[in-house]
Length: 601
Ligand code: ADP
Image: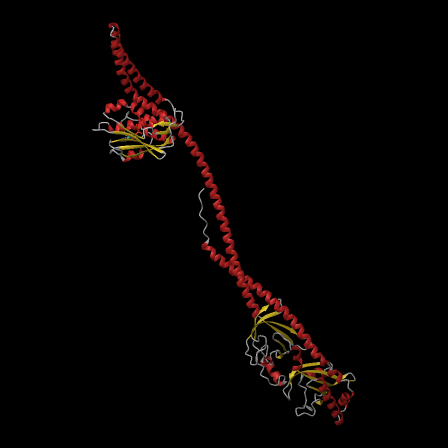
């Protein structure tokens, strides 16, 4: 299985994580802002209810004043017949009442709107005798209703809240009683406000505010017609009524609130809460007078918190994403590594099986080849052997014929010496055939200590005829002389015969041919060298020497199996066969084998 390289995400991964972080950040911002605004609105609602209740409580304190005045006999008598004594009595009464109640003024109007008695009768700013028909609280009360009016006094220019009631005589409104309460009294209920709050009247003019500079500003633009009316009724006593500077940024649908911005320089010492910037505004109408109560909650903290949450979500999200990717990649890497390991194990197992199988096949083939190689050598040798045997056979013929004659003549001494010669020849021939027999035998494969000197002698004996024919006198040097190797005697001789035969082939036709077979001990190894002074090895031959069927010899000259078989046998012995440059200028083959101790027979 091919190993896949790890997928490289880096191209799209970073932008993807950035987008994810952005989305998470935006989501967290939205959520946090929504939650924050919800909390502000919830708190705003509570404040609205609280301020509204306390404001109403403050106004209610004075609500029954004008109505109770209408029940006073002195007041009723004054309406019916206003003589100087009655006026003076009621004036004093109203003055005392005003002092005790802490209101700005208390006064009584007749049906035509003239002030006929007032608490401030003896003060320079007294409006005794003035006509106040233009004030709406008079109109309301004379029509039989309770009047409520916020306005600025015409004489002193003092803002105040006017409460009026009709004075009923025989069930009909014959006059009007009025109480004017100061703003400070109403604002007392707001001493503990935690954020801006204001009340706007029916014209949208701020009349009560926790920030005093907001008073007498317009929440919404006043039309020219309205401004004219207000000027005519002296409603705000000709105050300029600049805009408050409140603008709606966003309506918080379904939550009865809006996000507003307030841009207004304030000149007084800053209160504990912000008085400009962005706010969540909640407005509630006050019952009965067209006024509205508005609370503002600073939005800044919500935004700051939302930004913090957004940053946390983005960073946290990105961190988790990177962690996740790293984890997935690691998992994938481990999985692939495991897969690769499995594949490798499988390949390894298959290879091992194949190697085993091939080794078995090779071993069988090798055994066959060794045997075939032997037969080939025997084939080559048989011609020489026939010649070798023919000579002694012919000699035997002659010797035996002569011995018969010597015996007939009674020449016993000659006959005896002939028979001894015959014995020698037979021994020689027996040795030759024995060699051949043992050479052709398949080896048992068991390794024993083999004396190296004897193996060399035997090999040379087998090739004796070829040596003498080639005029080669082999040198043998075995050091120490009784050195032995762990081998099989027959197969060791087979290697030596192969190497010496190759050397003889190489020396064929050479003037001054030399051949040395040596053995020396190197630690627990024995090196047996077959050295010639022939032509040496070509590069091609050197590279392919041990290939089966590689030969440079003419057809019929060699099978190209000798070295392949020899090297195979050497390996079987736990050794090796290598070629080196000749120490005599030709070729040297070195057979490296394990040293063995000769057992005492
Ligand atoms: P064969 O003798 O049948 O050719 P071998 O395997 O014994 O097969 O030898 C392979 C070849 O190695 C020979 O044909 C020869 O070219 C080369 N060779 C072997 N021994 C020698 C040597 N002593 N000198 C030069 N060449 C050699």
